[in-house]
Length: 375
Image (cartoon, rainbow, N blue to C red; front, side):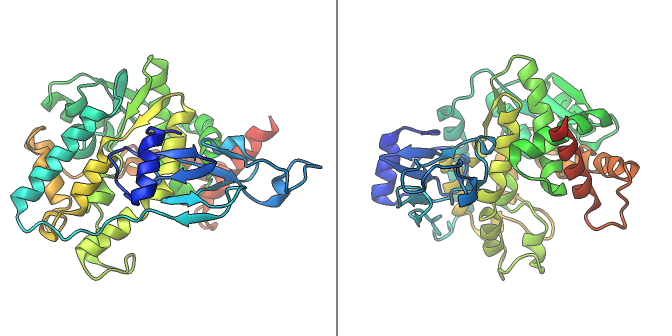
C-alpha cells in the first residue's frame, strides 16, 4: 500500500469516505486492489489476456499489478475511486465519489478553510530532503514558500519560465537553480518519458518532459523528493475554458466547469507521477492533499474564476504568503513556458515530420521510442 496506512484505507472503504485525510493512496489491501478518488497514486493491472506468459493457465494465474507500468506487458490503470471485486483484480466497484458540498456563503470563511487546508497538507506530508519544481507562478511559489526548500526551474535559455522563476525567486529572496535545456536533452529524454508514462501523444510527452528533466537534475543533486504545484489549475479554476464555458466543457456554470476539470485529474496524474519517479525521486503535491481538495470543493463561484481573474480564491490565500506580484501574475503552461513544445516541434520538423502531416510531433516521438528500443 502506498500513500497511507491500511487502517485508514479500511475505514475509508467502510465509511465510503473519499477524502480521509491523505495525499492519495493505492495498492493491495485484504486481497483487494484500491485506488483513491483522484487517482493520485498510479496503480496498473495487467491488461489483455494475450499478455499472459506462454503456457500459464488463466484460472491459476495470480493477480498481476504494479505501481510502475513498465513492469507489466499490457498495463491498464485501475479506475480511480475503486475497489476490486474479483480475484484477478479486473472487476471493480466504484466506492468513492467526490463530494458536492453546498458552497460557503461567506467568502472569508471559505478562504480561511482553504488556508487551513493548505497548512495542514504541508505539515502532515513527508517533505524532508525535497526540492521544488519552481516556474515562478503562484502554484509553485506557494509550495516553495511553505516548504522552504531549494528551487529548480527547467527551460530553454530564452524561455518565459526561466525568466519568471528568476524574478519570482528574487522577489522572495531565494536562490534558484536553473536547469538550462538544449535540444539534445529532449532527444535523449523523449524515449525515457514515453516508456515511463506509457504515452506517446505530443501533449502528454511535452508536459512530462519538463517534470522528468527537472526531477533528473534534482536527483543528481542528492534530493529524494520533488515538490510540485500540480492540481491548482483544476481545483481552483485556472483554465480559460471554465470562464468561457465553450465547446470544451459541458457545464453551464463556472463551478460546474471546475468540477469537470477536477474529473480529469485521475487520467493526468499518473503521467506526472511516473515521469518524476522515473527520474529517481518521489513526487510531493501538497495542493492535492485531501484537506485542500475538500476546501476547494466548498469554494463559491465568486472565488473561482471570472473574465478578470482565474483562481481568485487561491490567489487571495497565496497573497498571504508570497509577494502580491507573484500571487496575481499570469503564467504559461509548462510545455509552452519552458519552450519544450516549441523545440520538440522544431526537432520533429528537422527529422522530416512536417506540420502538414497529421500529429507530426507524436509521430516523431514514436520514431524516437522505436529507435531507442532497437539500440
